[in-house]
Length: 494
Image (cartoon, rainbow, N blue to C red; front, side, top):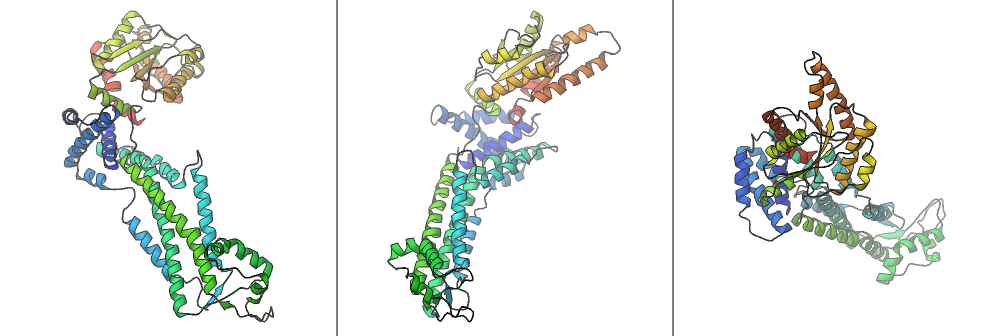
């Protein structure tokens, strides 16, 4: 998508993830958004999906903006202020023109620290840029922006507040490469214009002031000074044809001083000005302009093909399934638990009731206790499966090295192979309830065992749903809907 479409999509995604009750963006709104998106007829395959998502997001963002004016301002904002891309380079040009590298003494010191320092600084920048371009070495602005994004937590508050916070976090992370290109383009352009302004200022002052070129040093002699000048100004000398004097002439250019006894008073600085300006342009202005152009083209290209979540994202997968009219696929893998036929039937019915009658439910043969490693080495995972439920029995005492390891292995496998699949640990407490039915301490025992399971599964990094699969059908359906259907959008943000 382009940048504007991506902003709208990520905003709507953030609001829908947080608006689990459908109070801000209602079910009717969603139905209208789907109908509006259904009118899209451009492209096919991935392009059609992009267009459908963009049209739906455009409608949804417009509907949200009519109810909350702050959302419209949020959509109009940018991570990179456009005025900065103009003001900063203009200020850099003016600063370069106003700078006087020669000072007020009408002397051009051949070892001038400002000129050498400007070139040295830019060479350090090129080295840093080269290091940042190496594989697995993100550029510093990109890295910093992503760290800032990670520091934003939706937290508590109203649906709007949580949605806005999530959007800001997601957008800051998603737009970090684009923002880094824009800042880099501006800074490189500013550096180039500073060098051009500096060169223009030098020549303008030299028209009305006679500068004398010479040098002085406490530690360096004529040979060392000649070597330094040949290294720094040598390329400019070859390009312009202005020769660098031999050592003897360099020695004669030493400033007159009572300590050195030197008799020189410098020479006319015109040839040296040409050499320094050409060096400044070649070492600073031209490379910086090229880098600015490259970053500008990269930003232009990214703004028109902005990367957005695809089928690997749970939220997008749900939308595309709705768009295509296809049913969700759910896979259930029991571990150290063989559910009875009635439990299997109740689970399948509850899943179809929560996710639609056409939902495809597949229940695997149970994985034996301690066989999680062997199972992980042979299992085949279907990327079209929307949910993978790991079924446990609350009657079992949870063990991190077995139950927790099974959950952690499945979560890792899904994240690596099928990142769009949502993994949930489903803990059936029906057998536990039957075993302690009628006992006064049932509630206490149940709460204690649930806490133990929650601790093990939390350490494994897997969502948990504890339910009674042998309970009332309506109650089970409502619980499953609350965890999988109503909360499905939330899974995209975890």
